[in-house]
Image 1: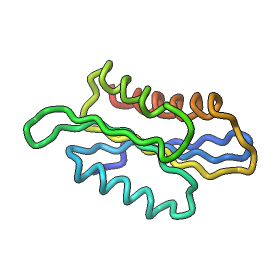
Image 2: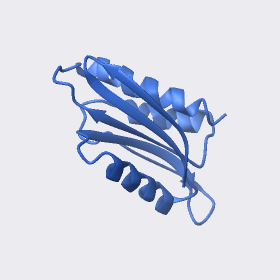
Image 3: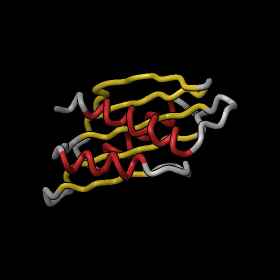
Image 4: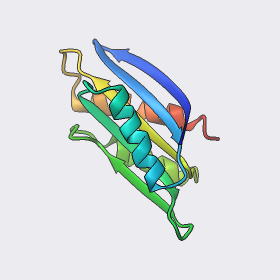
Length: 122
């Protein structure tokens, strides 16, 4: 697992930190998630999405919104498949800034960050 790219975005005092990791399998995906968790133990949410090969060489897609009321990681999963991106994991950390952004605004921020990271895969 290697960190391929990292970005930060601030919206209404909420801080979003996005990571793109190169992962070859489920074990590396989980290791990358643990590395992000260890680096940001006070983060409110860590959303994730990844696509990698299983032991049979078949692409596997995984995603989680980490209890956020949005569907941006599901939409990002579709982007992974549409662009046939395999071997990467996207992790987005959020530190709540005290102001609620609303579900649709939050969804646009998360999806925008994730889609921007995937542009580094092509």
